[in-house]
Image 1 (cartoon, rainbow, N blue to C red):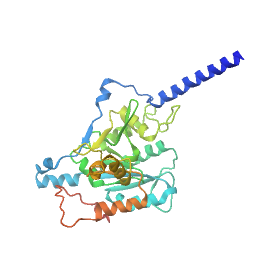
Image 2: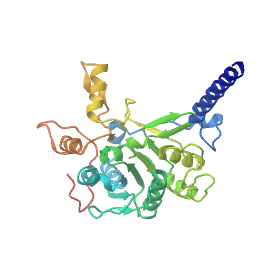
Image 3: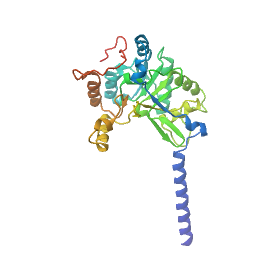
Length: 318
């Protein structure tokens, strides 16, 4: 009996140690070593203020508004065609080029067939395709079809940023030593960041098309690891008041959160006036957002925006 009890206790102890190891591994990033300087790369990206814009001449502002053009990488699945169709019919029209990437071919809607089921391998292939086919577009926005994006606000955020510098922007999250941009809220990459990423794709030791670790990393973490190898680090998109621009929740959820925090000033507690994304949106919610953002206008109100972002030429943009 003593022997059996001793074996049981040993088993319990070993099991506890194993669980502890798994929890530690969950916060460990494979292949990456932290250094003091790594802790200083993350910073906050903010759009220019109206005062900064008003210091520019009218020709300079027109040039700026025409310079920022966005290639949208929208990852879809044939099984959820309604989300696919809604993204195409709503915010996707505001991209200078919107390309849908699918895990397999579908007759109903046009998309690039990646012929791939693994999530990271799909994203890997889609970003390589976007880089090869972007022409003179220098900003890239990656999103799922359940995300609603206001592309004009994205253009405003990166207006004064040089796409020939490495930018990797969105809603940042920290996991152990790794800081990454949350996929659900949308990911912004400059041309230089994507160029470096495509180059490191060639090094299968640093950035394999399929992860080789004992535990499976999400595609958003794998992307951050590959970018970190090239010296590109996650940056949080914020407005001038420090409010996040990339939201991992729907508008309704954010309003509920705002009411619980400050029921007397829900708008202030909710989200930024210049928010770029809202996530977890149903097709119906996206159509409501489209109406509220682009079509509904309070008569007599003038928001005095310094710039106008014109829709892509030839589009049926709202």
